[in-house]
Amino acid sequence: GGATTHGRGESSSSTITSTTTTANSNNAATNTAVGHAEACLQEAADHLLLAHEALGQRDSDPMTWDMVSEELAATFLVLGVRRRQSLLGGGATPVVVQALRLTPGKERSVVNPMERAMEIYTTLGNAHQAA
Image 1 (cartoon, helix red, strand yellow):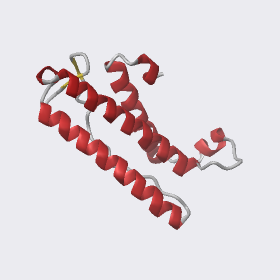
Image 2 (cartoon, one colour):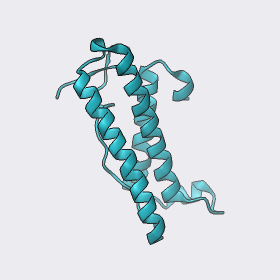
Image 3 (tube, helix red, strand yellow):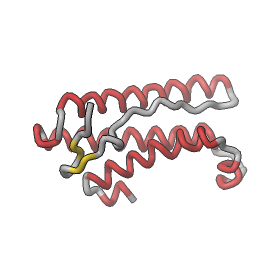
C-alpha cells in the first residue's frame, strides 16, 4: 500500500505499479511465443515489485533497493521493446506508417513500460540508461 520511496528518496508509487497488458500478433505461432515471452517478462516485473513491497522503503537496504530498481527498469524496457516488435514487426513498412495502425490501447502497452523504465532510471540518477 501507500507511496514507496524509490531511488534517491523520491516518492514514486506511480513508477512501481504492475502492468498486465499483453500484445497480440496476427500469426498464431508467433502470438503464442510472443505471449509467453511477454507473460514471463510481466511475471518478472511483478516479482520485482513484490521485492520492493517486502523492502518497504529504500532506507531499509539502499543497495538491495537500487539493485531491484535497476532490474525492474531493465525488465520494463525489454517488455516495451518486445511489445513494440510484436506489434510493428520488422517488415519493409516504415515504422511511422506501422505506428499509425496501432490502436491507442496497443500503443499504450508499448509506451507505458518504456516510460516507467525511464522514470526509474531517472530517479536512480542513471542518465545513460534513461537516454
